[in-house]
Length: 217
Length: 266
Image (cartoon, rainbow over all chains, first blue to last red):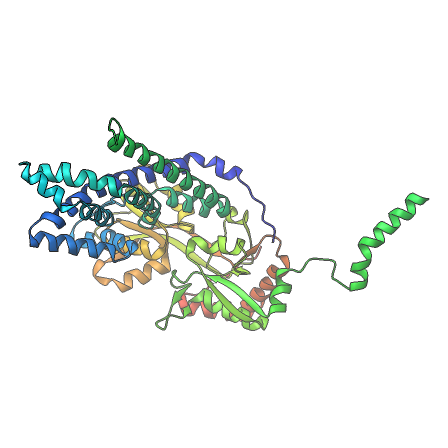
């Protein structure tokens, strides 16, 4: 069969696609920041908290990591309103669990001797966690965290099913009204690629600014 | 003279294989291919009651499905269903995954830019419905309300145009998700076919769901790819005969519960 590509339709709607891409970036950046905070809290709770907290965190992490993302967002979006909680479609809050296992791996990699040394020097518990544990731990697992965050950005396309108007949703709407599906999906793919590379570059820059600037190896 | 001979030789070189080999000079049409392979691939949407649904055994059912079954039977070929969501009804046809889409696609000029319509084989109304407690009596009442619609449907083409400034339209990928959004209270009202609305209302009597507004009434028709005139003509012939003998009316009545209105042709 021969198909005539018509990209001019796509350029007519390019501002809408860019608006969708911007929402994807906003959602992903928010989810990354929240996810990292949640991951650090969970990792702290799991490695240093009392047994009850440990069980709670372990349960949360296993529940989120071992169930499909799509089912989770359906539960959040369609089931919670039944008990009176009406979240908007743009609420991305389920991601902490994925990052928390990575952060915990980094914490496990810190030699116990360092923590004991810090304790011997009279550092307080929170100081130990901040300077001796979490900072080097995050540095160790940073590449794994960064690729987890890129995956997070790509999986944000799933929230289009619950009416968030990010890039995939806009693309779907445009292709369903213009019927130029090949063209729109090609351009959307290109935009996702650009965003991935952009996030990768930003994350590298953050690594440099936080862990390398002004430090001698 | 020499030029003439050369030109003649060139023409013969191109034409001879076709003449000797007995190859047809026109390309094989989709109808040729269907008849040769003895298989008709029909794209259907089984998430759109009562036109396309899955029965309790997980098998496709509904008025579109019944039409497709009868059509393939009368053509004397095997039927292969290509199940697509509402957003995939036109793309799957354009991508060559199906030969024809029979999925209650209402006739619009925008869609005709991408595909060719056969004659209509049914009619539907798009209505806005919601719980009794939600007050909507005129389009102006939509202001400030969240109205759920499904992508790639007639409601997507009509509701945003009739809804006044200030109404909040929420898009979903599948009718199932739109219905779920209404039942869970994520939206105040939804727009879809009157039949789907009735199914939802009957299935959830406790929600007291009622029809608020009729957005539009339209005829729907099977679609084929641009250029597939032979297949389109065969389907039109089939629709003509089955309008005459009452088969289409019987299928429509069985699944929608109402009488098939007189079908126009174009």
